[in-house]
Length: 385
Length: 84
Ligand code: SF4
Image (tube, rainbow over all chains, first blue to last red; front, side, top):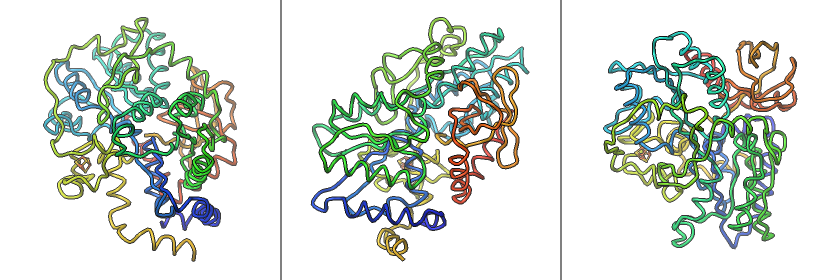
């Protein structure tokens, strides 16, 4: 709450909260899935849920890139680093995610593997240039915002004839995952996850545009509003979703017109489609195998594909047994439903991926939501004051 | 990881690179994903790449909010603390 109070536009937040309360039909519930981990984080950090009426709920989606990577792929990355004696470069978020038997990149590094944290793919290229006698692998993860930088790096490596650089590609696609959630038995048959609409991701959409969402807004009859990351953006978008639901519309609307257009960043899209092609199947933590939901490196750039360069064994991978991340990522459970939450599992000692990244639902609950038992009523009073 | 920080482009360099200023910190980033970037433009920076141009007003608003909420300090640390 404190953040919304500090924010200059507190008046606007109050007005939006009042409009949402006024327009939300008290005779029904509204469940909106925020797909993107950046929104999950913002909703907790700024206490947005506390400003919503009782019948407007956020369902946290699988849009945290670190959270959805299956343990298997993480184990493979560790194996590439250890068995093939390469320099493995990874984004910081990935470093502490536990793999099978709690083995994270950080642990493997402590045991002697050469694993380096990088901020950017350009840092990884530089490491390759500085170490011509070593193989350097970039552990690429992320959604559509993080994919174009990987594409640029691969093209640069090719242009510069950098033959000791390759990419372990784990890039995944947002629209495919949303469609998969809508087709899941939990949403369709069991009705255990109720979704009345989606908050569409901000920066992912700045790259792919708003057009890719049009198909499932129509096909699955669910409204989508592309929302900025700021608390007021999220609130405004909720209001737009409520209006669509009330009026029976299922459209793609764009609240974040400051950055997102219908066609997106065409230059970035061209680079991505030059370097990558669809993978037939990719496993997501929580969602299982999702067809055409990820990218692989095209044949023309096969020399830079770490999967082709470094063999990995077919060993079994295992997550911590009681970790509920898979159900949380599907929106079926909440972090507090997990036995390990806050006791065995904390950000300092994470058991699952959702507790590692600040965009993961468990980490957000732990950091911003632990003592919220009576928060909603109090927050509303404070805002009204 | 989904966040992007607005920064002002100070200077363009070879190979689609540029120097941006961020709260007094200068950083080399890539502008390979954008067309027609010129010094003075504000861009959203994500993992070392400019993703999108934004207006100066939008950049200012976002930066103020990020700094009030303490997000900016964290992001700056990630940018400057990463191995290079
Ligand atoms: S609290 Fe920890 S163990 Fe439980 S679901 Fe979240 S990440 Fe997994």
